[in-house]
Length: 329
Length: 103
View: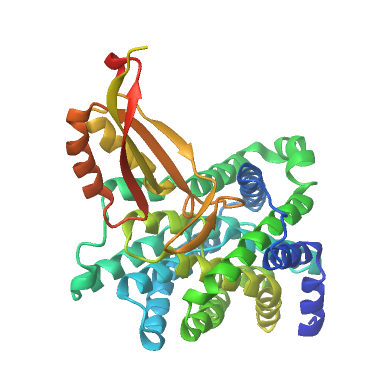
């Protein structure tokens, strides 16, 4: 078993994490360094497309199995339940309004695909085996947390005048959530990857496989800039109890992922990836849905937590912890 | 050149809400509008910038429409009702246009 110190240093000295740290430092120092919005969006499309294609291709090679179905089911259940855990923790430890608790809880039940991508690279680099279908598990974990968060908000609005009428759940919203660009692209690329076979995959490999790590470095530089800006401007709005939540909630989520991965009999890398999915918080699909459904929720709290605290925590310290914990099984 | 008095409504709104706002303007019979991305700014929630964001949340856009003065008050009221609890600004100003029949 690789020691935790070795795992942590390998992770912290990887080009991806170093570029992320560069972004954070540049933002904190108010450097003029920035990645244009269109470039950031194009990079995210590339990364989601690449991981979807590779995941679909791997599943096609391995074939559909009962363990795939169980893992998908576990992902859906975890995504539904993790917001309840997050909501309860916030209610017990903070004085945030119910609508903010529900919104933050939804963020923490869903996943960060970029944290997942970074973890996949670290796990591959260390030589651990992981199930190819974990990409599909990531895809199914995006949406249920949104529904849980909205249910929590609706439930709390029934008891509090302050949030009454604040939950705008309707058919249009559900359609927009289900058809969110990142979800459509991930699922679509996964299905394409599943049908193109080795020949199709090798045809697109020069674009999809080879430059992947380099592109991820540029994207993480941008994520570092965004996280650094969030930390610079957002920390004043966050009380110490809320700040702590952004650091312990990933560990709670990862614990749930560890137990589930163990129960599912996943490989070491698969358990670590499930832990990463449960530990990460969404900053793409969920924030947009929450702005539509819960306009009274304060977006700067949830985004600062998800992007400014939990994302850097997972990327630097969390991933080695999760791999070390998974390798104990 | 002869000009005609009109009202210019500017709505700054969060990007995720844009489609709903445009649907509302269509339903209210607004003939045309222009959507402009907002680059950066500062409000009650502090500084914001669209640089680097990969999600629509956190982005703001501005919708500009020119209205006949007789329609402006009703549209302002219904638009404000749609976004009273949302992040954004609705403003109404006086402008002069050349082509009266366009608005």
